[in-house]
Amino acid sequence: MTGQPDLAALLAAGAHGIVKLERAPTPETLDALRAAGTRVAVLDRPATKAAWLEQLAAGLDLPAWFGRNLDALEETLARPDPPLAGPVAIAWLGPDDLAAADRRSAAIVRAILADAAVERADAGHGPLLVLMVADAPGSDHAPGSGDAPTATPSLSAGPPGGTAMTPAPVPENLRRIGRIHHIAVVVSDLDASLRFYRDLLGLEPGPVVPIPSDRVNIAFLSVGESRVELVQPTDDTTGVARFLASRGEGFHHVCFEVANLAESLLRLEIDGIELIDTSPRPGAEGPVAFLHPRSCHGMLVELIEAPGGPAWSALYPGGFKPPG
Image 1 (cartoon, rainbow, N blue to C red):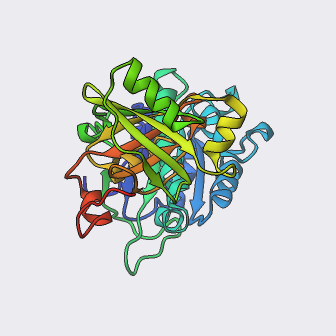
Image 2 (image 1 turned 45 degrees about the horizontal axis):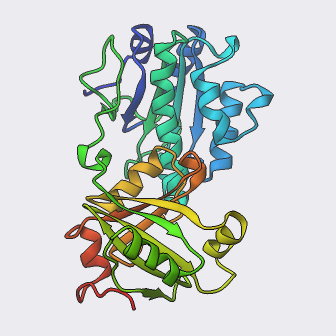
Image 3 (image 1 turned 180 degrees about the vertical axis):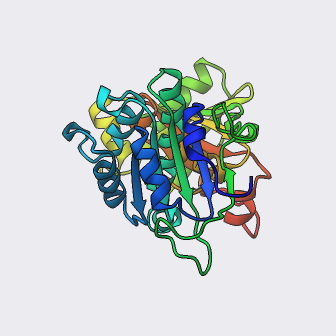
């Protein structure tokens, strides 16, 4: 879509979501939106999460309970008090500044804005239109620079008009979870536990493998296409040791297989999942990463990349060699 978009017409038609602009809307355009009853916030190149939230709160005159935190952001925008009902436009100048300084926060706020726009519209609270004013070499990013920007919907199922600019479907390979690779059980005596699983349950164990970096010894036992991992701490200073001391032996975490671990982590981070590992790291059986229980309903979740994925060649350029 070329030329200056008619923001008033988009909002009047109920369009909502995120739109990318090469240049900022003019002050006259923003004043006209305000005069027509639209709440307008201009975020002038915030480079920190705190600055981003502060500028948003000031621009939209958000209530004191907002508290300048991401936890309250979606609640504030998607389920607003009456003063914030009706059309809302957020002009975010230089979004790459925040992404360069704090990639995780930038991804989270973009996801929250997109989700809030949809939820807000579905609930009849009025459209939320987010104008992402991209960096353009040699241009002035202050409102009013330029009269003929090129605008393209960044999240759109079709050209803007009277319908929502809804997020494009997440690629299937990022949403798909493969098999349960293993479930992990913390034990105090690995030899005794192996006798139970081997002699009484008839499972075939693999070798006992020391993992010095994690200060544990482990052993895998195959069950169909999945495995049980027995984990014994080797000192009392690790998280696994503290788990054993406080909870006793038992279930510790579940591990799911994914096709592309780095992309899956990025997708989860954008969706607001708290990551323990922000990138793949070597594990006992390949590239792994953990998700924090706070984001997984109290369960520690591990992801492992399926053999042949891109993290294998990156982490094991000379070929995979199991630890131990």
